[in-house]
Image (cartoon, rainbow, N blue to C red; front, side, top):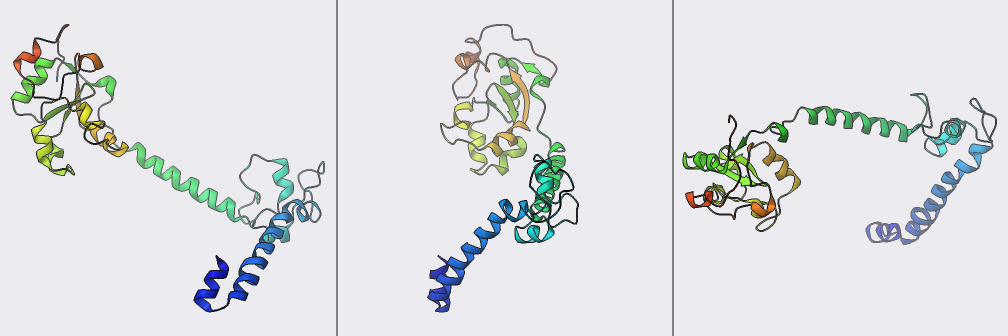
Length: 230
């Protein structure tokens, strides 16, 4: 690849082969091998003389930070080679920078709202759910959970008409792949809309089919239909 780039772009196939390919690979390999040669031969042993590893700035420059080898052998689980901030160790600085950014992102993630926790959701009966739908509330059922989608109607990528014609239905199958397998981001967004658990819907064998809830549906449901404040 270096030969082709130098040849076709700059008309120097020989330079691309000799310098950009062979000598470059040779230099990188020799610099890498210095970790197990010069780093055990030149330098001092400030941390331990039980092994041959040494600390040396020149070797650190050649190997891009691997020259503080005595420290590395004595503290092999430390992510640093250059243990002081000014020691030449680009990898150490990159890891520190990435860790700092990730910590900031984690702090921001903790501020996000993931909706009402599942264990705090009120429990309502199928009849109560049907009453809310008949009163004009834009609700859908997914995995036995009632979601209020009114604020999302005009934001849905497929258009509000899809949500409008499925209001009041059990859309579990549609959401999980019968129509479109929604992404993890969509699942997270959906969690912010959940408002209640609907009795007898969360059990797969008792899920209703995706259709409008009507009075006859209620006759098929069993068990107590007590509802909590909602």
